[in-house]
Length: 470
Figure (cartoon, rainbow, N blue to C red):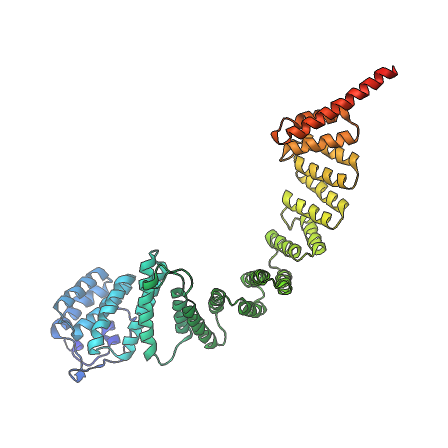
């Protein structure tokens, strides 16, 4: 029995009963009331030696927990036996990966220690830190908002007590502190404000402060620290600082697709914010930076997907840089680095029209017609462009093709346009057929009927003249 009555350290005790060590203790603290070092009672010592040790050596954790429960029933409330058993119980639950029960055991052990100070300071600090970590881990996985708030609050309380007595912090500990405050600052995580909306900005500022301490604590910060700082800056609305940090990161890690995408999106966000404030020059500048960021990424072989290429085109369109946008879109459609959709070809054609380059617009749509050979809508658009440059015959040819391919998304418009073109070319029979067809649609009935009557009158006049001449 001597093993449990000498002035031993807890680490040695845990090794003696066959447990792995997660909670170390270089020595036992003095019992404040007795003025002497605490000792395990003979009864509990026998239980640990004769019953718990074999169960632990056999990795029979359920039996071990049953023995510890038996010991707790025998231990005097507030005794060193009770504090020690709670600590061993927590360690055993760790072996079973039972975080919640381990947390409960740690809290009970600390509650006893708060009154009697049995644990060495190092052990006490480790237990507090474990309480914070487990509470945070459980809080981050639960789907119950109220429960999550309670666990984050518990983690925060334990961590702040731990921080008061901590002499220095490792990088990982600084990261954990900032991560806890970051999660706690999210909407609806405070127990007393569970129904409130929005980020807790003072707490997010606090998280950012600790993240910066963590970054300064190491020569080569890990990427997760930078990502956390970015998330904090963005939630605080400090997008300019976020862009500056990302510029640093893309220089350090030019092969990171994620950093380039984040930088592009940040500049776009700054551009939107500036536009909302009617700061046109700033909005132009930020959008241009976004475009240049995509192009810089492409120099490193990144941001080269069809979606990325299309986004670059869209930014140049928004900047009214139509020449650059059209060149990129045309090249992308030709070499298939931008998705060959009908909408993209129509966008290219419309853009060329905006630049008064009608034949380039027609060429684009003719390319689209090869890819979408059954689309009457494309033929209709080609006809429209030819009509605007007074090439009625060519317009009529493509309207014939439009009708043959099933018309347009709004059939009455196609038939009316076909009728007008035929009438202009004095193709009266075709014009009458088209007007009659258009009249079948309620949207065009009135106009088509008027045209139909006019064409019939024209045809009748022609017939009368022919009869007179004969």
